[in-house]
Length: 110
Length: 112
Figure 1 (spheres, each protein chain N blue to C red):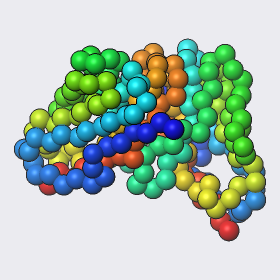
Figure 2: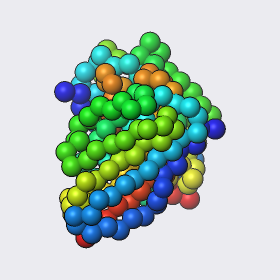
Figure 3: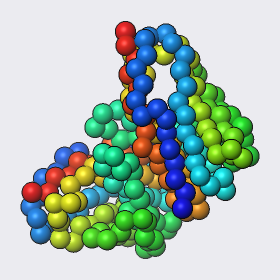
């Protein structure tokens, strides 16, 4: 059974710092991996999707990498801003469904 | 832009009531999903649908049913609401099985 783990569970950083969020999964036979952002009490916003054949994807200050063989993905956020404060979720496409991690709660202090 | 809407942001129902949660997407997506999100448990898949009138069980289908009569609309039904179904319910859609899922704003359901 696929399991997705996100470390750390929570992170607090000063504004301007570069940071890395980690996601690991137990079964490397995935179709893709997706990173989401969730603001309190709201739905999920898709940030990046990496297909299993890809190594990384970039969007603005965000860069996500995927190492399928080791079962790991990282989300790199450059020059963090208070507006980046949210919960970040990763999810792997495992067969017919997405399997989610529990998320990392990020707080960027001004 | 893809838009996924859910009929209510907040809902309060009594134990034993039949509850309908509606989800509509405007991008002609084939696939639609219902999840619930609980603290410490993350998002869990309840049901999904790959086509009109088609449905498949997810990880936690007990106590729920779904209906997809039209491509753009996917309904989640709680046949007899119970307090352990108090949760945030999230609907999602995608064009195909291997592409991005887009989520609605969520419905926070409280069953008293």
